[in-house]
Length: 534
Image 1 (tube, rainbow, N blue to C red):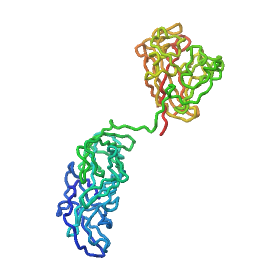
Image 2: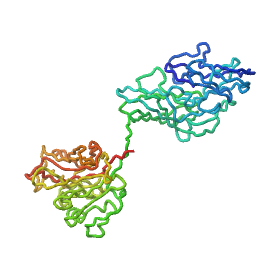
Image 3: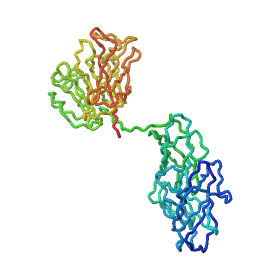
Image 4: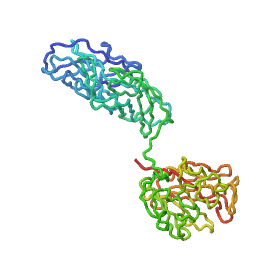
């Protein structure tokens, strides 16, 4: 019924005290409904309180007289005259039901409501008896939540909906029969729901304060006192704000619970439109079908069933990363998950790791002095047995660089790509230094000096689309002077590359021994997160 008035009136909740008797048959039968306790003033507008929501009759409203439905009224008003077609069907009955969603005494409170101000369309329900003047005051039998939601933030997105969820088993929406003879609701609820969503007919701009009711929701009576109500505010840009409210009273007939909330822009949460799938390099996450590295002579090592099967032994010169020095196309594929794949690039006439690549490893040590040589090239700086991100054993080790000197013959840089050819956003990966690199940064070796105050080493990632065009670049500093050397797993945001089919990795830096970049061209990476659109 009743349209929520922006300037608020007192609630119309008084039932008539006597039943009309001996109603006459007429061509048109008219009853009068008031929306205020004060018959003379009908409706008194003023400031709302936390107990009552004011109403007025709204164009399109109708009532039931017994089982007979009236004609709809044509305008908003505080006093409405409802007309029925005459005849014996209305004679002798005085039971008035206000119900626009069910039939006479059955209320149907909707689980999806519209904040257009007309609560009748959402399931508002009331009952009255005609008095001797064929008039009535409606007594509301549903319950209401009055939202007073404000903001003090500039640039706040508009509000699109409010969802309120009660505890499991509490039906705050659904069909329920009102036993008007006893003035009580029957126990059972048909198609019950513990959640109601209030959609705004037009996206609503929150204000810093209101003189009236911003929005209201119709609810079935329910025992919610002392339980949590979860309220989620969803905004036009897809962001949300969620809070818990614990009412101190139940949803009772004709009563109103007020929920006041101030939302600031900084507290909004933007739900992603994608899911993240993560390449972990851990055996328990392997989904790929077994495959063979045919160049491997050892029959026990050539069949790859898990990620750990790709870990070479020894680290330098092993059969997986070096093979016959000509045809070792070491490859991996995160099939059925991120769809990322890698194969050693073809450099110097072969596919060996000395020409660059991404090799799976579980070697780790914090003793970079004793385990910081090329013979320990697959070793990350970390605890033995738990060298991967978050203490996992496995990770991936990159080797390879390309510069503009004539002494570097690298033609193809190591890259990861999507095997299915779909362009996706790689959200991030975690990066750490190898023990070999840290030893050279700190102490140097026969090929390079240690890192000075002005020296740096960084990774350069370049994204490519399906046509081979660059989509963007991203940088990550592995070392920036001797006091800024990465020694733990650090998140690297790659989302700025945009949607890519492949990403190429290069290492570059300030160290130059006269033959180009002279620091070890290694870095470890783990937990590569890829966005998959929902």
